[in-house]
Image (cartoon, rainbow, N blue to C red; front, side, top):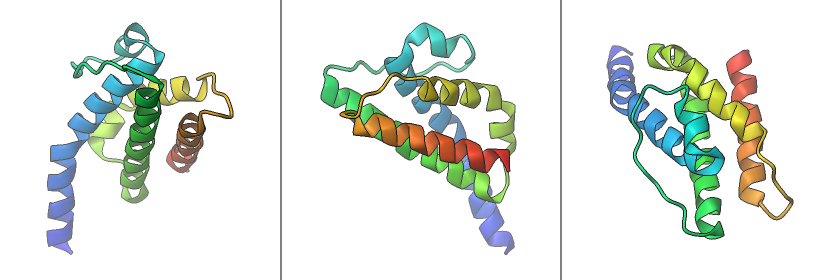
Length: 123
C-alpha cells in the first residue's frame, strides 16, 4: 500500500546514514581507522575497544547491522545504499579478510553473515 511505502521511505531516510556511520566506526576499531576512512567521506563516532569482550560485542553489533543491510536489500536497493556501495563493499571485503580463530565465534558469524549479504546483493 501507499502508506507502507511512505513509512518505509521515512525509516530509510532517517536510518540509512546513521547505520553507515556506526558500521564504519565499529569496523574501524577492528581493521584500523585509516583503512576504513580512506573510502568514507562521512565522519564517524569514535569508539574505543577496551577488551576482547568488547571486540566480541563489536562483531555481534556488526553482524546485526549487516543483517539490517541485507534486509533492506530484499525489497529494493535504496538510492543511498547505491550511492555508498563502494564503502559498504570495502568494509565487507575487510570483514572477509579478518584473521579469525575457532574461538572467535562472533567473528566467524559476522563473516558468514557478510557472505550471505553479498550473495543476496549479487542476485
